[in-house]
Every structure is written in C-alpha cells, then in structure tokens.
Image (cartoon, rainbow, N blue to C red; front, side, top):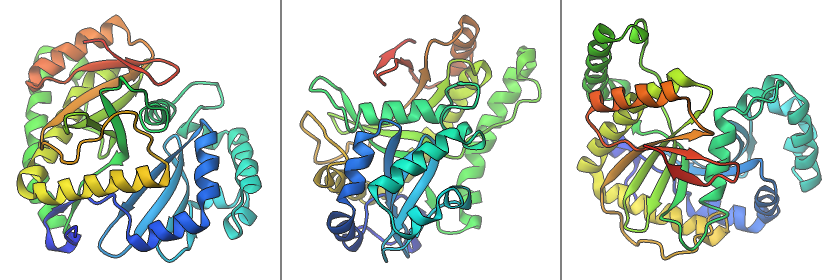
Amino acid sequence: MIAKAAKREMYYNRAMSPELVERISKGFLWLIDAVIQNSELDFQTGSNASDSWFSVYRGTGRLLTIKENGRLFADPKYITLLPSFYEKPSKAGLDALIKMIRENKELGRYYIDADGKKKEGYYQNLVSRRYSLLCEPDDDFIIIDKEFVLGYSNDRIKARITQPVIEKYDRIMHSLSLRYNYFTHIRQSGTECDLVGLTRQGDILLLELKRHEDTTKIFLSPLQAGKYDDLTKEYVKRYYDDFNTNVVEMVKQKVDLGILKPQCEIPTKITGNIIPAVVVGGQPSKTAKERFEIVRKAVGKEIPLYTCDEKGQINKLL
C-alpha cells in the first residue's frame, strides 16, 4: 500500500484508487479512445489523502476531471462553453467542446494562441503523446506523468524543506547578476515540472518544456530544473519505497487502461536516480544556447538541452 500523504512530510501520488480505476474502465473507455484519437489531448491521473482523479488536458488546460465518486469537475471557463457536456459527457459532446475551445481566443494561451503561436502546452502535449501513446521500440524512455509537483503535509513543513533550496538558487542568480546585466531583476519561477519520464534502466527524468521563442526562459531553465532535481532527490532520500511503489502502480494502471503504450520492457523498480533536462520546442537561438550553458555551469549540474520536432521526437542539442 502507498502511504497516506498525511503520514509523510513530503508526498507524491499519481496512482488512482482501485475504485476510480474500476469506474473509468467500466464507464469511460469511450473517453480514453476519444483522447487517444485526438492529437490535441492527453491524460493525467492522481490521488491525495482524500480523493483520486482522472483528468483530460489540452496543452496545459485541464478540460475535465473525473473524481472517485464519479462526479465531473472542470474550470468554469470550460463548463460555460458547453454545460450539457459536463452534465452528460459523450464523444459527440467532447468533439463539440474541442471545436469551441479552438475558437476561443482566451483559451488559446494553453495550446495555440489567436496569432497561431504554439505555447508551452502545445509542446508538452506533443512530447507527452509521442512517448506515452506513440512509443517506438528504440525509445530510451517513456513519459509517465505531467505537471509533476511534490506535496507537503503543511505549509510550515513545505517552507522548512523548500526554503533552503530556493535560497540556494537565489544566491546563484545573484552571483550571475553581478557578472551579466541580463540577469538583473530576474526572479525564480516555476512550481511544477512539465513532464516525468521513466528510462529503461529505471531512472526518473524531470523534463522542463520551453518554446524556442522564449530566450530568457530557456537560459534560466537550468535554475528551474536544478530546483526540481534537488527537491525530488530530497523526497527520494526520505521516501524511496513510497515513490517506487507509486510509480510502479501508476505505470501499471496506465498500461492496463491503454493510456500508456510502451514498446519496450518496463522496469519493475526505479533506481532512485533523478535526471533533470530541458526540452525546447523548435530550435533555440544562438543567444539562448550560449546563456543556457553559462547558467548550467553556474548551477553545477549535468542538465542536457534537447529540442523536439513536430512529431514530439526529442534530440540532444547540448
């Protein structure tokens, strides 16, 4: 059994409860098929001390969440587009909802905006599907989760654990600002890691996604990736057994439901090794690459930089 979050200072739980798995497998297989068939959509699952959920995303926008009790939830901005879908979900209703979302300028910021610019969510979706639903035999890893964030038992404990890490990266940023004027007035950002991968060997990948146009975000990303790396390693050091059990169970559930389709043998145990990396959608500028290397060196971690093509295939750049 995976330990309840309340019994741990830190926790991560993306495996669903048996009750929710049964509910999805009996009543929502049509939804799984619909999401698999639509290249704009993706899945997320999870649990906490009191509930369990199954969610559908378009980019970074969460369109629908099914809770353990069978109730459906979504942000009001989606519900108001088509209330009837959330009252009685169906394939036809989902298709109609997606059409409305595409035509809504405000919601474009989660996927492709009104000017046709592809957002981080677009690339997140692209890479996630490529390495979860469209896996190939030669792949070195699979994507097992998105919007990764560690939980803490309360705010006091969260501050005690995270503040030293935040201060560490503040010091690095301050040091960089003394040498490079483009670091002036820059603050740390990011509370969730975009994607989590699992390698053939059982290592955990923490992937941060950026758009090729966002030069500043690209060269700052080693700070973000380093912070996620430090906090995740702290969690693994404390609660490796919980982490291993949860990852193994989550992967099994996703494979059984057909929302993860690996073409290689899946490790039955994680190693505990954490590998942070950055993926850029498209080709970053020369400036972005040069400054990325400066920041990566200051962080002092091996944080590879990848690019991804329009099929979601990633290739190492630095």
